[in-house]
Length: 423
Image (cartoon, rainbow, N blue to C red; front, top):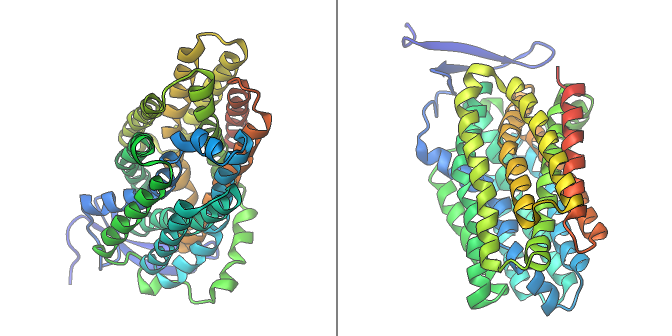
């Protein structure tokens, strides 16, 4: 029996040449016979899963000064709850990734969302910073299952360059979350108080759960990991000695570090230093997301023609240059609020050339353990973010300089990792 015209059979192989599975590729899209075609609803659902981090962090940002005041703690104290979220979000991905490779993607994500709902309720009821930080960690432990396995779901269905294009399209959709979250958070804060923000986050989790249940499983049972998930943890060692994987992971991690310095620093820089109203803070935050959406749109159009590695290298160079410019602005005070806003717009916008391309490049090298590779990559990103976010709190002096200097530094490091490790 002949194959449909335009269909190519591709055999996936691991490093030792073992054939893992045969799949059909049609027009750049990969399927396994069960799910060869995906529609806009699939991409929208993935974007929602990828948005758990943004919804859990960005909605909370306008409330940070108010939380510090209500709980009678300093800036570094309230940022400890942010650090707890970042650390748990990063480290717990190491748990969910192997589970996703063994049991499929849907069931672990649903379990993670249930844990997220429990953590959200705890945050809403927290009476001190210790309880709030603990519940934020629980919330993050559940939330991280969604994005780490959503990335693997893309790799289940699409090949490398098409995956990068799909990641960019997803980021266009999920760009709504970081734009809307601070605006919603500011309004909820104004009318209902900061505790209600966590109930809104719980509602988002419920909607995501319903959306996931409308989609079929993406991981073919024939390609699932057969060993116990604890044994799968050994595969992290294989990833950690791969210079190319580390190049993708560390390049994106430095950029995430800059983004988290922005997340941790701007509530205090904008609201306390420049006296920006919380409602306007949401608009300034959304402005940077618009820049990211524009660059992601450009990336989704160019990546199939120019390739992921070339665009990633261009993005790393731009980030380094704009990061240095932001650091100079923060040191000299040139342009005041407008100078900081412009520098952050350029830096944050051009992260659109980093995230999708680095993720697609890293997962393409290890298609047989995409969940594990996605987990390790996510862990490096969020652990870096936790460290950088803590540094912003420790070095805070009431001016934009510490935040701007850290962003400039991680931008330069990202360029170095890209040049030295990715060939």
